[in-house]
Image (cartoon, rainbow, N blue to C red; front, side):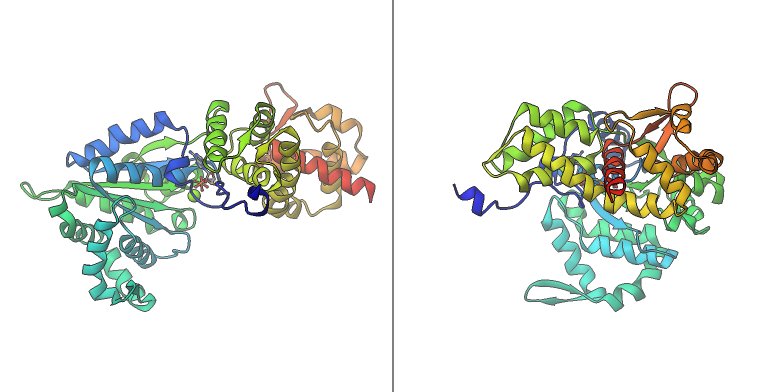
Length: 405
Ligand SMILES: Nc1ncnc2c1ncn2[C@@H]1O[C@H](COP(=O)(O)OP(=O)(O)O)[C@@H](O)[C@H]1O
Ligand SMILES: [Mg+2]
């Protein structure tokens, strides 16, 4: 079989938003966005949405997926800008400009038309399309930021004759820029300005979607109290067992790999609803499998390999570095050695095995682990629960290794 020599490409994307054909679940949230946001904007009314949820839960994926749907079904022009590297409002302008030049996710024809017009300012036509000038993007950024509404309005005009009805602007990764005190007033101003156009003047049908963790939405409100009220908040939670199963079947199916029921149980158990972990696990199973059929053994091997990967990338940085002190580390090791299958433990049970100095630091340790979102309080008093199975597994693996050496 040539699958063994040449596996082709993995259908898993641990570090990227999921492609539309492999997107699963979120039916309720999508429905809400379609009806209360996309539909309204297509009918001419501006709407602001905030997509919130923890790291890796699938915020960017749903933002891009709903943009794709909105472009296909309601003719809203999707512009996606990540503010990951933005520090100032000028940088926000640059990011929006860049996003505008990459528009046309569903309909590349729309994007080409816009690129051709905007290329006059920020790029040049070459044999291979439009090449952008990084310098020009930077110098135009402040102008875009200072007049974001007119800029988006002009962009819309370029494709109005194609039946485009509005703009769907996503501002992703707002975690950094939310700390800039100018950002919240910037958003509020944008929203107010578009609502307060003179009578008879058309408003810009704009769907503004912000994406970030809950803490950042709250932070925005501290910089401008009434900014909180302008957003319709959509929360993204973990995927269900059925959604994960559906995902694995589709993903493996798309590359003609079979997956046993027992393997599915193992994969979904450890992914535990976290989409990023789901992809990391699937990817490991894909590369470990030798015969075009993922069985339980492949799945277990994938869990072990992925625990290392998840652990060293997401846990070590946050947890082991934050827990520099020897006492903290030995407390963690002792917790790690508890039965690896259980996700909860009782404070009293752990305390029994601790030294006096460890006991004194135990409370601080627990608080710190809660702040790092590794633990949360359980249902009964004195009970603590690991938030992720893979993290729990990694801590156990590490404690095994440390005890041996
Ligand atoms: N609905 C979904 N279906 C399938 N995979 C998803 C879904 N949502 C997210 N993912 C995957 O999960 C991981 C994290 O998603 P991402 O959208 O980047 O999360 P966030 O923006 O919240 O950090 C990525 O690997 C992505 O491909
Ligand atoms: Mg994201």
